[in-house]
Image 1 (cartoon, rainbow, N blue to C red):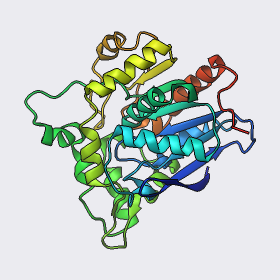
Image 2 (cartoon, helix red, strand yellow):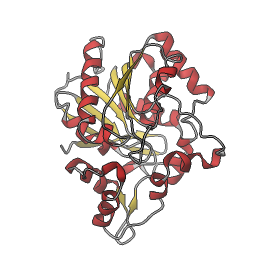
Image 3 (tube, rainbow, N blue to C red):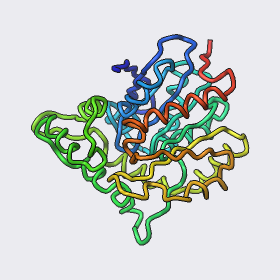
Length: 306
């Protein structure tokens, strides 16, 4: 699946926005936000499982082809960018899908414009993380992301060298699919032999500070709770390095239901934080939950403004 790219004016420049799936004007629409070091190509496999839908997937500010956009960064800035995307594409109402940090972004979007988001599907993200013990705020990004943050400061002599780096990554021990290879090729920026990942270190560092439930984010969850916005969260049992217990330890999401009682928790077997969205069987499970959420949503989901 190749998709198309649209450039959407936002504060400071233009946001690259990928579109996958149906070209029918009345197709149900999903706006999808990727993870903290990713790009819109992270949704390739999910989009392939949902050909009847229109998947609108931006490269978030500071990532992919949007990496030249300036700061300030932060979840609310990304949510404002996504609202501009909804406006630009004349989308009155949509389901919002987010993986990892993207889950936090779509929560912020839904709280900001709740009338425009029919429901939320959060993929291993979106609920406040447990702050690491004894880690200073400045060290939080590296503590959370480990090698993923370090990768942003590396250079690679060729595309194949970047692929080889990922072939050795424990999250993809079963091999790199065609969709993952596409994602990796898209992620590279610069010129050989100084190729580098497209994500901005400043963007990642800034955004990572807000994943532990600052007061404004808890207020956003209260807005969604009071409105009864339908929400599902899918949990991966293994983390970024394919290690248990995953980004959310067992019981962590159940505890989060005090913040969002309507939250439906979906446990996904035999996946890690990457493969829950970027490979099978994780992607097909995400697709199933999205279809279910759309079926339960009101008829306005995906409607365009005439």
